[in-house]
Length: 197
Image (tube, rainbow, N blue to C red; front, side, top):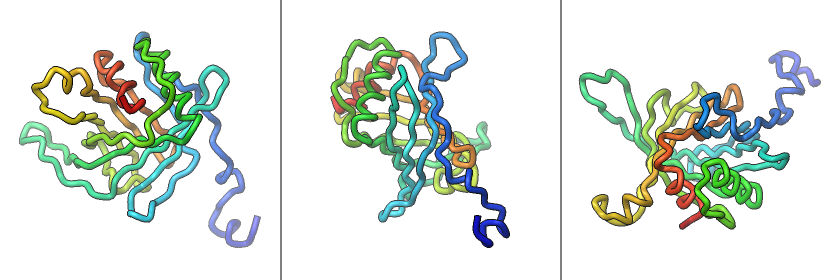
């Protein structure tokens, strides 16, 4: 340990990768929330905040990248909900074979029977923060509701079949990330979206 590390209290284990949790960590029977360890966090050249998160499932590593866009606008929930919300874009991005295994694992947990071969390169979601500020992930945790909005008209039957919602929780201080279910009715659509279908 160098002099600066000793002065500022940095320990060698702070740089060690966090232990990987089991992907399915839900305490509620019938719900399949996914827990990850944040292995890496960085700011992209565009000013977005990117994270690489990993877990284990069936003895294998699964992973994905989450890119939280830099531009967020304030959301007014109305006078009955005194919370400051933010609206922006969150992209879930493939990290290769480990992401393919993640989507296959999610398909298995959800029981959707879609048997996806791979995760799409990148899937964009509209994000609305429910807690914290997505622009300041290094300051405090954030809870973000994700909306997958496919092309088409919202009244269209195909649009409704492909529309999905989920929750993303990011706690960089604890090096944790969670992708949680909103409703079991969105399971098939979420797997389809992540597989690029």
